[in-house]
Image (cartoon, rainbow, N blue to C red):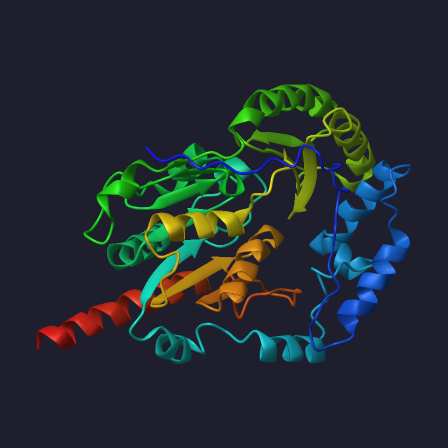
Length: 367
């Protein structure tokens, strides 16, 4: 059984609640929106609760249309802005032949986020089911290519949704990685017992803060806590906006007692996780290394995801100069992805196209 250790950032002060980078898209709207947002948000520590509330509002898709304050990750889909963005991040479906040409003669390795990528975003996170058609598409891809699910969910939870034993699962944003228990020939036997838990020493702390927060947020209707083993998710999709301030206060006050933990944000979810040098990008690198592809020049990794946490993986692919990142989004977002898809249905179509192309290639070889 393989284990993987990383350096803990114990001597590094806990980071602020949020950190953004200046957008690098064509349009100046990204930078202008970012500056306006920073002028509004104070992360100095004195007003952290108010700042957390502002971030919750600003990152809400419903707020984008109503407010003049925009975060760089959520820009209103104005026609000109959207056209410019699509030029930089064209549809992976319309550019499918281009992608296949780039991957010719190389081994495709597939990485997939779950929520918002393989399943739609739903109000109840416990009911984020993928369709049978999507499951068949993922299974088809895994038949020919090493395939991993990389998600903020705990490994056990996402496996209960997907139910495919031939996949690699990297839960808790890559802090809990296990290998497939069965699969086709391309899965090497030594990878079937992978265990990578770089934040294992944080388990007691995560369990403790999970129990504390669960009690604290009971007073807030609609708030839901999810213990994802190496991180804790506080969902506020079903919380009325008038109660967001109370939720921010509860989360902020509890987190203040745990300097070794940090707060990040997804789509209507606040996530608490260890301050270690590990993310979805590190998980991608670990899996490539485990598969024997760390220094290989003939691989073509494809990473598909919809969340800002997936940006770490997109950045790794750009740095490696290998493969592509595909962002799942209906609106322009500042991203390091190369291509885009507008939702799980298009993701399914893209995966089905890959399988069809592989089947066609095999038929041609046999004829």
